[in-house]
Amino acid sequence: MANLTEAPEIDKRNAAMKTRTNHRWATQAALAGAMLLASLGTSITSVALPTLSRAFSASLSSIQWVVLAYLIAATVAIVLAGRLGDMFGHRQVLLAGLTLFAIASVACATAPTLGVLIAARAAQGVGGAILMALPMSIARDAVKEEQLGAAMGLLGTMSAVGTALGPSLGGVLVAALGWRAVFLPLAGIAVLVLGLVLLAISPPAARVGKVGASLDWPGAAVLALSLTAYSLATAGGRAGVAGAASLYLLIAVIGLALFVRIETRTSAPLVSVAMLRKREISASLAMNGIASTAMMSTLIVGPFFLALGLHLNAAAVGLVMAVGPVTSALAGIPAGRLTDLFGAPRMLVVGLAQMTIGLVSLALLPLAFGIAGYAVALVLLTPGYQLFLAANNASAMLFAPDQQRGMLSGLLGLSRNLGFMTGASVMATLFAGLVGIEPIANATADGIGHAFAATFVVAAGMTSVALLLAVWIWAKPAAAKQAAT
Image (cartoon, rainbow, N blue to C red; front, side, top):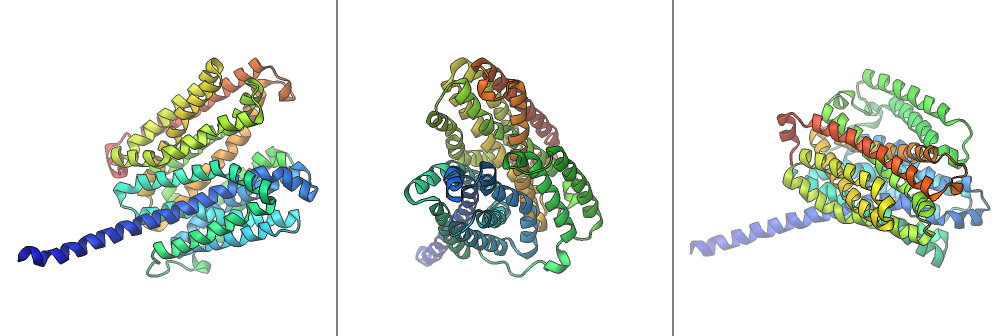
């Protein structure tokens, strides 16, 4: 009789557990969709640039702004997006970002002029900044601590999938339906993810802030100016922006110094200087920037070596380059599970060590074994980067106070974007300097190969520094225990 009495209670508990599990998966699906959408917004338009140039009778430097407007807007807005999430609730701000992204995507698809298209892409980038910044902070609240690494790995996987899928999807749409069709799927996906967020993520009990009283508008304005100047210093030259890169870099440095001064004096800072004084958080941001700089060098320098050093045609270059994003996409979820199993600090060190080995392999193996060596090096490198991302993001989020998780998510996204910009500019400049011949197409295959190898030896040196930093940061047992998942 006792068993008959307990059976309904057991069924209820099992049903409740199943409901919670389904809800958790729905929440992670919503966050993964947001991350996928943000990365698609970055990569899907690149293949449409030649078509856009013909459609608007515009120069290459003008058309580049279709890509740059999104990247710069996302970089400038990402910290503010995280802070707004802390103030008004991460769910509400994520919904606003999805709405903005959908509207901006429609505006892109219907743009009558290039200027309108670029403005709409900037608005889309602001929405994309929210989609990059908020999923990590929401995941920290929605997922158990021992499963945080898996959640971060899933987000990393979806970012890699979006990066890999964007060019091929964009190419098919442009070829079949024209350039306007590139933006309509983005709007549709944004609406679908918005609906999923409404269903899967519960609203908070109350708002946590007020715009006028809490938002550091002077700090936000100065930070936006500084980041815009840095973006122009790294990317403006190829987009026809007047002025020397050194001038923009000087403006960025002065602006950053002013921003720090403002943040130390305001009662409600946009970025908590006290939080940045925690060595675990400041080191996580620094390592994130270093790793992203090294990874961007594979996308910027790699095609020159494949095309000019190994004499591959464009299609073959694309196929070889796809090994990286595909491997990265496959490695994201296992990397997160390894982080949960062995702890974020340990996997952070392992990830950076594997990245360093992968970069050394990229410097040596392609010269010895050609395409096969290049592919093997990418298969070594990209899982290490995914493991680093999952472990670094998980460990950093565990050190963030509850009311500053959105801010830290934004800072992690910012450090990654700045690393990508730095890699695209500095590593490309380093490679060109090592080649030493202008135009670079006139260089010999041996010259290209030696410059390529030297560039990735430098990149390996950078990740070695990050590795030493990780070992030093997590040397204290208490810190490692606190961050372990």
